[in-house]
Image (cartoon, rainbow, N blue to C red; front, side, top):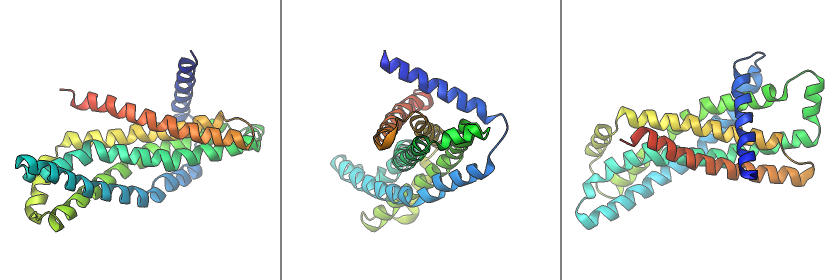
Length: 246
């Protein structure tokens, strides 16, 4: 029953957040700050994660394919693996680790120090000022990060494939371009938007509902990251089923 009650609270919070997105006032300064924090400042960790994952994926596929004389499939499998699955999921988990924890800790600290109560006193709706800008920024920034991560991951596989495994550069790139379809790209960006929404929403939800004191802030931060990571992995399966079940 506690699990179902928690799902209900998250669903109500999500519905309220979506409802407030379309009603003024709009806090563009907060949105811009959140966009910079979630998007631009996440580029280094996303790029490094995607690059090394793409390189390791190329090595593993080559080693596995060598058992069946199928080494030539490395470019195609790296491309589809990064674009369809690894790119969106890894970016989503990195955002959960970096952004969700930051949002939860920031809002929970504001609650502990009664800054949220001060917003209410000043006739400022806390959800519109704190939650909506961050969720909207994540909806915009994370798909872009996923696209960048996909490209860097494929290039990581390309560098390892041509520099370490002996593939011809032109043939590798041609195989990659020929194998990726429009649906792969659309699904990747759609997953990025969904994962960004989940990551920001969980940070705001647990921050708004944190307990008092330093222990409450710590618990809210930990719970937000765990919930975001689990929900991202579950959403990944559902979206994969939606796009590729046929």
